[in-house]
Length: 207
Image 1 (tube, rainbow, N blue to C red):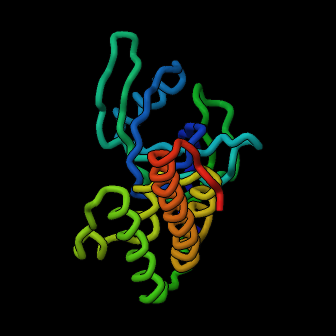
Image 2 (image 1 turned 135 degrees about the vertical axis):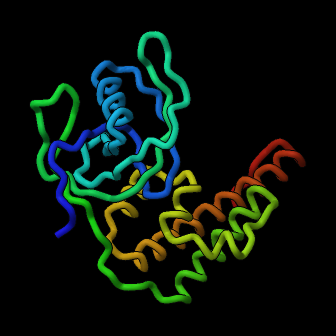
């Protein structure tokens, strides 16, 4: 069993936060202004849970406030948060003035991924970054990246990110990422081909 935390502040949002991912948030509702103010005062984390079309998911990610970017006269705030630990929502708490719940922090299964799988995913990621930015990450940068670190820098669909968050196996996450990166590369190829065809005759032909 992972670490248990009771009455943990929760922020249901239309996004999925991953460990190591940096996300800016605009805080404007009174209940969340109160929640974030308490987190800042007591240096506490809160949890972000994906509020999907099918409802609130039960696996989220703890968020650490790394910077208070701006506080407005009416109490609204702009903050920067970093994802930390996956957790499972065990029970929602209704007694507090903001959403909260009892949670269990989730650990991985303890097995290390095959080095070849890790290296392959890093290489695919480096190729994608180079295609998009014309700058390849250096070996030192790549050597520090695991599945979450890689995924945190790419704008994947929410359901794909949620699957990564829910997986308790690093090797499984690397396999998911390899497939997602391959799909992203194909989209880059298509956009580039479409751009060249549009330049030539204004039409895109599907082969």
